[in-house]
Length: 98
Image (cartoon, rainbow, N blue to C red; front, side, top):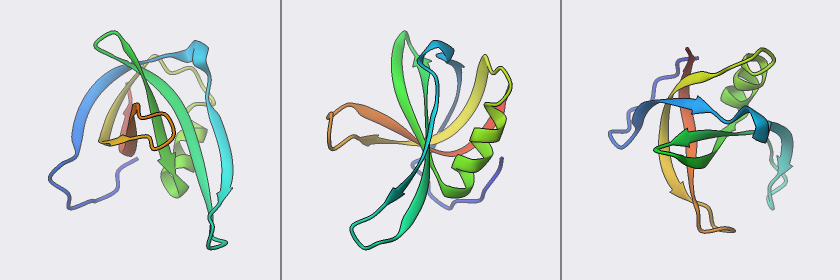
């Protein structure tokens, strides 16, 4: 899936998917009452397991892509600190299944 974003701080890399950690798709309701769809999965980055998240249209597209086996994926993402765990998450903007 390709979506245009004019942000210079996005990173693009290839990753191995951590299939045994599985995926998760859920709908989140914000404090303001807005609903958003969230898709979560894990990749290996330099030997470390990294939590990846995608929202709304990208979440739906990734959910469909992960219905088949995926070993490698190219991601365009932004690093962000998870406010609950303090770990670094990758917020996915674009992807390409390898």
